Structure formats: C-alpha cells, structure tokens
Amino acid sequence: MWPFSERYPECTPVEVGAPHEYDYIIIGGGTAGCVLANRLSAPVGTRVLLLERGPYRNGVNDRIPLLSANFLRAGAPKAVYPAPTPSALTSSKTALYEVATGKALGGTTKINSMLYTRGAVGEWNGWAERGCEGWGYEDVEPYFKKSERATGVLAERDWHGTEGFWSTRAFPNFAFPHLKKTVEACEALGLPFVEDANSRDHPAYMCAAMDMTRTPEGERSSAEAAFLPLSLVKERQDRLKIATRVVVTKIAFDQSAAGEDPKAIGVYFEADEEGKEGVTYFARAKKEVILSAGAIGSPQILQLSGIGPKSHLESHGIHVIKDLPGVGMNLQDHVGILTIYKIPIQDSLDKLLTSPLSAVPPLLEYMTFGTGIFLFPLTQLSIFARSSLLDDQSRTVLSDPSQADCTKSTNTPDIEIMPLPLTQTMEPLPKGWGGLTFLSCLSQPKSRGSVRLASSDPRVPPAVDLGYFSHPDDWAVARKALNLARTLAEGVRAVDSTYKMEPFRVLEPNASDDELKEFVSETARTCYHYSSTCRMAAQDDLEGRGVVDSRLRVHGVRGLRVADASVMPRVFATHTQAPTVCIAEKCADMVLQDSH
Ligand SMILES: Cc1cc2nc3c(=O)[nH]c(=O)nc-3n(C[C@H](O)[C@H](O)[C@H](O)COP(=O)(O)OP(=O)(O)OC[C@H]3O[C@@H](n4cnc5c(N)ncnc54)[C@H](O)[C@@H]3O)c2cc1C
Image (cartoon, rainbow, N blue to C red; front, side):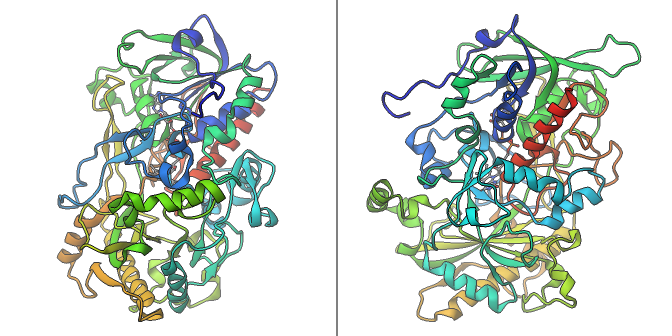
C-alpha cells in the first residue's frame, strides 16, 4: 500500500454475519469471485457478500509484473498444498509437485504469470459438442470482450474488447535474443509465427506471441484491481460487502421442502487470523450461493458441506446432503517437463537470482520509463503442437490443410512448449551460465487426479493427488514433446552458431522407456492449471462424472452454482485465467437472468 493511500473497505466476519442477509453470497474472492462480485452487485438494490480467505494486497511487490510473478518470494499471497509424488513416477528431489494457488483478494491472479490466452476456437466448440449447451466459441466470445480492456495494438484487433475492466497488452518486443531465434527454429519445423495467440483464425499449430494482463502503466492487472477497484467498491458499499481473512467452513442447506431438492440458504465461516479462530459466523443467502474457491477449494467446500461421494463423506463423519461422486474427481493440470540449456547468464533471469545487485539498473528503468525486464512475467512466446502430426524429426506435417483449422475441436494442440529464460530447477548451473528452459507441457492429458478431504476440519488442507501419467497414453505424448523441445533448442543453436548455448538437461533422442520415465521423474513439475474437479457434465458422464450443469448449477441441489476453473470439462489446452474470467462473466449473466 502506498503511504497515505485510502483504506480498502475490507469487512470483518462480525460486520457481515447474521443478522445481515444477502441476495447472493460468493465464496472465494479470487479470479472468478471478483468478476462475480462486480457483476452481481451492479443492479442497485441487490445485496452481495464476497468472502475471501486471504487479505487485500496492493503493495509494490504485488503490482510489478516480474516481482509479483515470483510467488516463491517470502510473503507472497499464496496457499501451498503438498502433493505426493504421483504413483506413476519415481520420487526425486528436483521435481516440483507442490500445488500453489493465490490466497488474497484477486486469488491466483495476484501471483500468476499474467499470460492472457483464451483457448482456441475449436476447443470451446468441443465443449458445446460434448453437451455443454451455450459454451461454443460464438457463445463465449462476447464474455471475453465484455471483461477486457485491451490497449495498444490489441485494441486495434476486433476480437479484443476495449471497454471492460481487465487490462490486456501485447509485449512491445522480445526481451531476450533467444526468443527471436526460437521463432526462426519453429518456422523451420512447420510451426508458423502468429502475432496474437487469441486471434480467431490462426493456424492450429503455431509459435505465438502471448498477450498479458497488465495495465498501460505497466502494472499487473489482477482480478480485484480490475473488477473491484477502490472507487467501485466505495460507490457500492451499501450493497457490496467484502470480507477478507475469513475461511468458509460449510454451506447451509434447507432440506425441509418435501419432494424438493435441498436448497442452499447460507454460508458458515470463521476468521482466518491467528487467535481469532473458533467462532463460527453465518450469513443468509436469499437467492443463491456461488462457489468460486478454485479447483482445490471448491471441491473441498462442497465435500465439507455434504456434497460429494457418499462413502468418502461418511468416512469423515459428514452428513450427506447429496451423493455426487464427481466432486473432487477428474483433477487435471498440465504436467510440465524441463529441457534445459545453458546460455550466457546476461540473457537469463538467473542473473537476477544469483546477483541481486544486477536487478537495480532494470528496476530503475522500470520505475523511470516503465520499460525493461520488470514488465516481463517469464514467458513472451509459446509453441503449440499436436503429437500425432509430428514426424520423426519433430516437424509438423499436415496430410490435409483442414488439420490446421483452429475452429475444429479435433485440432486442439496436445503439446505446449514455453521457452523460459531461467533454470526452473533446484540444480545449480555451472558458474557464469544462465538457464534457458523449454518447459514442455502436456496440454490435453488423459491422466486425472483428485481432491479429497484429509479431514473434516476445514482448516486442514485437502489431500491432492495430481495423478500425472495415471493414463499410459500420456507417455507417448511426453516423448514427442521432449523430442520437439530438443529439436527446437538445437534449431535455436543452428540459427546462430556463434551464440553460446549448450545442453544441460536434455532427453537423448533414442531414450528407452525406462530412461524416459527417469527423465520425467527428475524434471516434472506442476504448471498450476488445476481444473475440472467440479466438471460441467452429466452426473454419469463416461469421460468423468459431472458436478454442474450447463448453467453451472450443482446437480441435485437448488440455489448453488460453481463458477471457477473447477467447472472446466477438461483442462484447457492453454493457460486458464482468461477462460476462468469468461466462465465467471457468463455465470453472472445466467444468475441475473434466472433471478427474474
Ligand atoms: C504460479 C501460477 C502461475 C500461473 N500463470 C498463469 C498465466 O500466466 N496465465 C493463465 O492464464 N493462468 C495462469 N495460472 C492459472 C490461473 O491463474 C488460474 O487457473 C486461475 O486464476 C484460477 O482462478 P479461480 O477463480 O478458479 O481460483 P483462484 O483465483 O485461486 O480463486 C480462489 C479463491 O478462493 C479462496 N478460497 C479458497 N478456499 C476458501 C475458503 N474455504 N474460504 C474462503 N475463501 C477461499 C482463495 O483464497 C482464492 O482467493 C497460474 C497459476 C499459478 C499458481
């Protein structure tokens, strides 16, 4: 907080609990929750309560892109859930399975890497084909545009919105020399360069410049800064209450209406501050409760409230409101696998980590001119490919031009490779070298994990199983992805043979299955795109049991919706914050429509 800046109106549990009543109670003031709080409190006379576990944060470290994206820094607003080594992998000291999410008003948009990707047109169309009525690309594009305030070159492109709340920008230019070389290497492999990964009609497989969520002034545009700025919250303070540092423990249901499904009527919560635990508060919802606690938090709260797999709930002594086996199943994430090259340290962010003094000139540049690497949250470019179209030299070979049509659901990429100018591993590089990591992600994994209660105590983190490689088909995709990463990196070296770049951790071309497994086990890590634990699908869907219908209403109960990354039928083959905001925008519209 700047000195002398006005206090943000955060409420305490006492101030918002009974006897106060609300039309809508939103659980979780994260990415989706902030959007919902904005939209649902727009009509004058509608009372909305937003309950968030973390605090309001607006310090310099929370706003500068590069600093705020370093969520490992001390004091970053995050929750970390330990996850065991997935059973298909062997344990290693260098893999990274800790599940991290944001814990603050704004949620994970306070700590994420700020990449703004909507997902390909065909991927959304795939939702509609799978039975999610009203979720094809034509249906959702208006919500993307509604939320967005694009500036700079993005504002000239008609698929971007310019009058919404959430600031998006393109990168002015590549911050590191190897990125331009990567573009050339991609083009040689049949992956054309695309200026905007969010365009409607780019080739399905590409190397694309990434848009990001930042303001024209060069600050992070997090969900609360965009959708719940101080001015808006003050203007609506009679009808929008925001309680921070509260942990929601349970949703309350009325089961008294004979022959009717149970109805959500309110929410129990406690203070989440040391010394203030133990007192439970209640707030009543006259119309609806909307759960937006994220892909880990939402299934935890549903299960604590008696909605989930019956036997699991009973094993924790929880009264069952609705036996809904899909709750907490189907956890998906992009597993990332590292291919690392050594490059001159001045071309890598490792320089800032090994010699913090070297950060002073670029920080001054950022503060003075608003330019330089402090604007840069890790990735500017990403590569999207499909394993089935890669030949044995990792070239993308199309047998039919329609295979490049990004509007077809069958053309969704299953590999994303991000060139990151840092080491991304616990292993130190030899002195004088920095890292260039090609982070290969399985963007359409078949594997699934789960989020289950570890305890009926709401303060005990749930048991998260990431489930990586629980489906054997993912191994073949991983091999193709790692071969492509190596070929790309070698292509970067070939573009400029004078550039100092050497392999550090690379899968050998003819690695055996055991060697592949060992390589993956040593270098696998989460990509933080947790989703699908409350998937939008029928309760008995064969691909994975559903939890909400196409209007995001929880099956078999009334007055309760889920709107966050957990409702994605599958993890998006891209980054998940923009689709989450779109889901929240559409949810708000549906809630308001249904209230009439
Ligand atoms: C390190 C990192 C980098 C990422 N980078 C990108 C990126 O560059 N681009 C991109 O598109 N995506 C990125 N993502 C993913 C993306 O940010 C998330 O998928 C998205 O923001 C999730 O939004 P959400 O609303 O589902 O959950 P969240 O934003 O996590 O919101 C959930 C909120 O609920 C609150 N909550 C949980 N339980 C309770 C409870 N019991 N009581 C009260 N409140 C509760 C939490 O504190 C949190 O604020 C990244 C994620 C991480 C962790």
